Length: 256
Image (cartoon, rainbow, N blue to C red; front, side, top):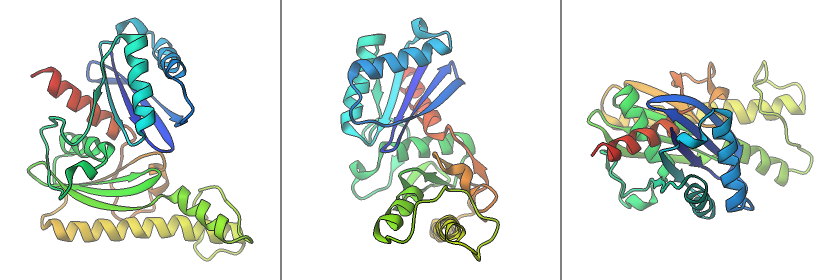
């Protein structure tokens, strides 16, 4: 059993693979206060739910929260006697990173790119809707080309309600119309349809800069379902893209 862990600012996603098959995955809150023992017991319980705590033979992680990286790393060592692969720009992923300062590319973006190319080929554009919205591209020959970063949708809602005292936070459900007839509908329309329009605009601009016909535009992340059916450019929603990227990289290094 391979444990994959994607640690983000808002969510930590844990995937459990039996061979190449994803047995299950779990989306959890990222808590800076979590202890090593809490992280270890959490992982142990998730594995036990899948009848596999004694079968863990590997782990791979990507993270944008250093303090949580160290705690989950320590937990994997303590509870599973496993030294995790921690993905970064120096890891042998088989993918060239065409970025001026490679260490500025988030490891989750690298994992997304690896998985997208292995699953869909290239050129492929990846839209990751998490704490931030990232729109990244992979070339036809498997080179990570870079991308764009925009504020996340939840951050936009929180920022709006914080700075405009007469407005309030709303649930992120698309309204039935863009021309809102009450404050809730108006905020939902502005945030959700505005975000989808931004994503489509970025995808189209990036597509034109790639200079080749894009084979796939895939969305992932906690809010990926929100753009399904609304976006003109997103063709696929893949909730396990980042986890699959970790699996691909882990297997590549293990098999060498």
